[in-house]
Length: 362
Figure 1 (cartoon, one colour):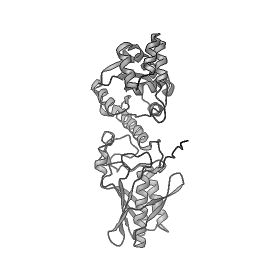
Figure 2: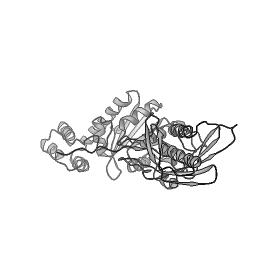
Figure 3: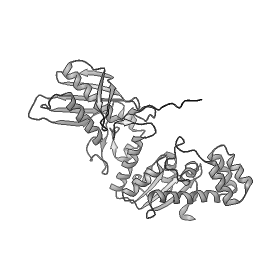
Figure 4: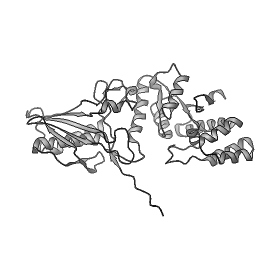
């Protein structure tokens, strides 16, 4: 009898930044590096974060770094060094906490994000946690504190994200809505989808193209060459959430452009299409195949296919009308999540990028 492993929760870049700040203040006040600090999350829960390194820059200035831990659902910032340089001023008249971004923290250049253009990409959640960390470290806040968050590998890490498209240049974003990263919650990905939609609306767009990754996006961009890059939103596995967010932001048309594997899951109305959250049902596809073709042998072949791609090859060769059926079901499922008033179009690609179904051409 197997025992299911409990997935380990990690913490966000915002939590790491707050811990680095608290570590640096401890170093300034006590002249020694703390082995760990306690951070209060935005939920009110408190967690212990190890301090990686500290160094002094003089009497009232220090730097500490934390190794970011994303738990058992690692993202691109997993094990990245997140640091803070903190300066404590003696001027009792200022009584102010200023938070800026340094090396490896991106600068916002486009409207539509939580942070205004020209500011460091440090969201409100992390700012609150950093402010709380400062207040907990000082008995009374009669001194001004300057905080500079930095990420040594931030520029390189940002190349693996959609930050440039969002208008975040020069590094990563410091994120976090609760402070924790829960396995399968993909908090950073969800935040990116919502930010991408917000930037698209701020750019005046009312139509967006939903793709599930870089390949489907690349093929979509070949079709819709006149659209700006802000119109293309990589939603990954977040089918329902992305549709609901787009409706809430006032988009009028959504084009869903996908490969067949994701298409089958979407056609079943699965809200989240990750393999761990929804089993790709070849049984359902087989049932649809029999419903459309009335060919029992063909339906059995679909049921015994090794993968969705294998099934796709069988269908495309003999009964492409089954693909059309799947596409129409995607439109129907999307309208359940998004509402009937929004215009939904579906495009299904073959694995070379050719369009094999377009709901607007049926």
